[in-house]
Image 1 (cartoon, rainbow, N blue to C red):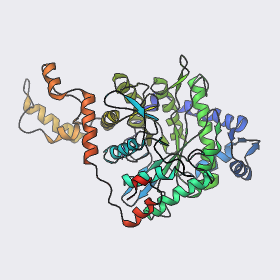
Image 2: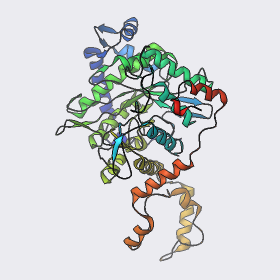
Image 3: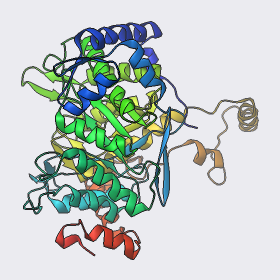
Length: 485
């Protein structure tokens, strides 16, 4: 079991949570949330919500009924893995997600392409701190966009390159034409069921983001309904920005986000009660000098801790935290901000984190080297969460060691003790060497260079999953021509 240190309770009290809940109820019942979907509006109306045009108002009774049917934890299945998400378990992770550009080792920037997608899939598949894979870039310029559906080929790439479960995005009206987006979502779920030959359990998890303030687009709602009808879990999230799409005060952002997320969760349970759903947010601040999102700001951490407290109050699986930074290179700023924002996930703790490694410049950039560096940050935070092993047995043991060494003695004798290896995280990337700095640097080189070398080693050692002929035939119906088996 992963120990829950409830780090957020240092900032958000039980009384605070109850106040946030009270005002979220007022927003839900008196202000309402916009749903740009006739099907969703009819579903709400059928179950007793107040519907005024596109605005849905939800009372406490309907909210509580919906929350009561959401599982506290759930498992996503593949033939090779069962990944369980919930408060008792280690936070589950997925990497770099959808940046339009990439930063390369020579400090050049260019648009992401399909090869970048593949390279990131290989890194995620070989990562010991990454549980799900996803497309690191979507709708890249080198895809064949003459097809009516060029989203499904990108989905199929995840199944080709990894046996880990997939964390997906919603199909949209630009990459799917000629059929409804609800049907596109259903088709994606059916592809996974057929490929895995698992028909009655969750086989993928999808990210569904609301529009702030207080709204859901027709695209997102169509995907939610299609996936939930197929029994597939969704993460309902907000990504609001203070003083732009949310109130300037952090309190207002948290209340508005909470009302928005809860309304989406209610919809999922009205469509298919008992289907798993994750309560999530990556809402943050606006840099008003540039009117731009700022995901590495300390206020982002505070908003997410309050949201985590609310998710725990509702006894829902929770998604917060990212390796978030506004830096444009994997430098000191990138490391400091990524460590800070990821703290919510590992010390909080939340149950799921997207973008746990590899992003720069507020989602706009991806970086292979930062993926490797962020993996190390994930390891450090995992170690911090374990804390110190304090017990009577351990105290007796160390007392005998202290007694044996005595005053002015030492403990450096024989082989490295077993308890040292058990209690210390032994980094293979960060520098721990002492000595004359020029000599150390000449020996180990620059950190970013070490990370770049690690990238190439991982990619070179990667091996495609061993798929059956039936699975290959299924994927060949969708994969881009140059990716077919």
